[in-house]
Length: 144
Image 1 (cartoon, rainbow, N blue to C red):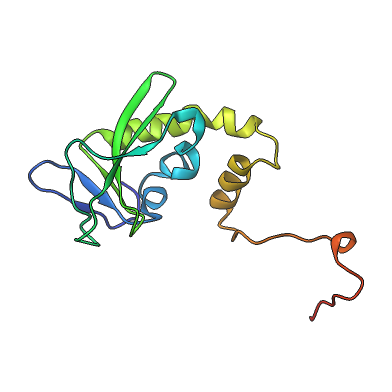
Image 2 (tube, rainbow, N blue to C red):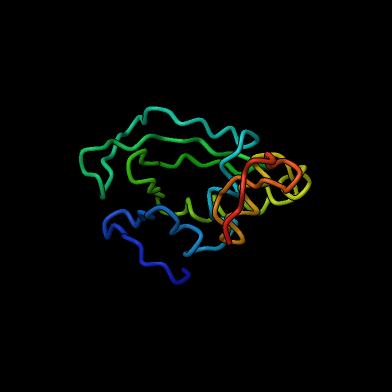
């Protein structure tokens, strides 16, 4: 994998990725900004085999089905830490879905949330409102 330190289970070979570590481990195609969209049907639900988050310990992770372009995977996500648990082989499926979604996201208008989220995460630009000079009220001032 990439330059991310991740937790791997010696028994099942599953891995827990802290928030932001999927990108560090496997690139932009693995980052949720590439695959966590309505087109992938990724609704979060109660897991049939609940597991506890290794970071939060008292939080049960929820399952999320992610499918696109013939690839289908069920991952586990923590609402507390933002971490993601992937069973053995699921990282490859997530990356394949991320790559398959790229043309869809690239074709999205710049003003959609999906396109903005992908472009922000791939450029490490913080999400802040942008106000042009024409949108600023005459009484507002900008300090430099």
